[in-house]
Length: 122
Image (cartoon, rainbow, N blue to C red):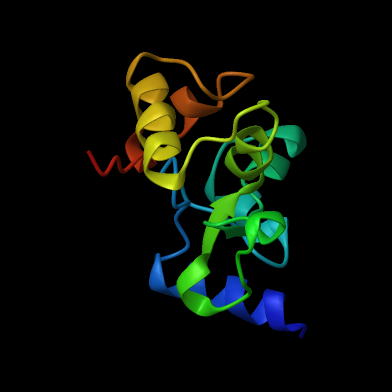
């Protein structure tokens, strides 16, 4: 296991395998048990794969130290970096959770299928 994979795994354990930003459950190594547990399509399950997220990006001087790594679902992680000005982790978490409360954020009705699983922090 690489250092970043180990950091991601440790972060996922600390976070009870819930995304740092959206609060939904994530899977790490095999989606089959996750698919058995939740009524999701293959494309929806792909969005909830656990990834390692640098709170302070490496390109801006962030490190692979555990205090800088959190576990985030693939959707939240990739979407954070699609904008020209990347929000800091706290701002991004607020944005994601506000969009979820408004019924948005995830494509293909994913949030509705996972409604009982969403744990918002704010």
